[in-house]
Image 1: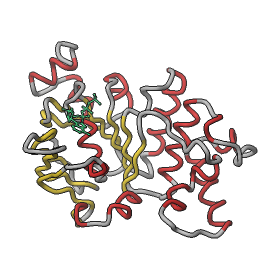
Image 2: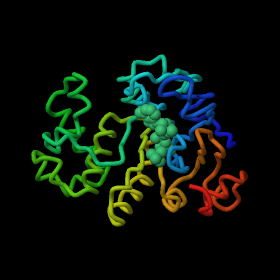
Image 3: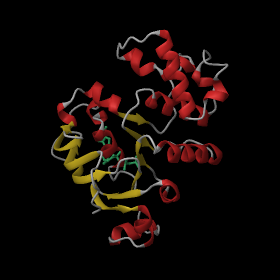
Image 4: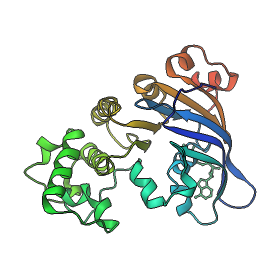
Amino acid sequence: MEHIDSPVLKIDDLSVSYGGDKYSIRNVSAGIARNKITAIMGPSGCGKSTLLRAVNRMHELYPNTHNKGAVYLGDENIYKLNPIQLRRKIGMVFQRPNPFPTMSIYDNVIAGFNLNGIKLKRPEKDEIVERSLREVGLWDEVKDALHNRGTFLSGGQQQRLCIARALAYTPEIILLDEPTSALDPIATAKIEDLLVKLKKDFTIVLVTHNMSQAARISDYSMFMYLGELVEYGKTKQMFTMPKDNRTEEYLTGKIG
Ligand SMILES: Nc1ncnc2c1ncn2[C@@H]1O[C@H](COP(=O)(O)OP(=O)(O)OP(=O)(O)O)[C@@H](O)[C@H]1O
């Protein structure tokens, strides 16, 4: 397994169950490299989303979950933090662009603050909205329509809006669960370019089914299989010289 010096996040022997003694991921340990893109790959049901959710405690939104092990953000075990505070530091973007349908573009960007009862003055809100929309390359496209609903945007624009919503909190880490699987190739390419740009300021962890996407944009890759982290290393190395048989079989299309 890849050793990461001074990781921003350290996953330590983590197992997660949605109920009973069946664990959907088992004994996962890995450091996540700061200001890099880490891809999580593997066949359907291998536990990619579960691992991603466990890193900002979104899995706890399902009933009966429990976990063993720990995840450290700096020196703090995230399971000892307040989940709302934690999700300000580790944001999440989902597969389907999900702007709040009744809210304007402007309100979508600052939704996290409003929903959590954080009061901001108008100039602060304006500043956060403009900064976040600029960061995702959407400002020029929407600056004259900020008070229109976000759902009028194209799928790719909506997904960039959802990334802007995550960035509004200036998190340390952004988790993305198959963020381009509902998008066409042009919108996908824009999101991929955006993620490569964003890694200068943020650490990115990306679940993807799309091996060529992982190869194109990630620095490190994890290969998961049946709930286990089978291989973790530099993406180039994993794609050219996988160490585990199962990784090779997945990359060559024999499993998954
Ligand atoms: N809310 C849930 N309740 C119970 N079991 C779940 C839940 N979510 C996932 N699981 C189970 O956990 C295991 C891992 O699922 P997970 O969604 O993490 O895999 P995945 O690799 O992300 O799959 P996919 O690529 O299909 O999204 C599967 O066996 C799945 O059935």
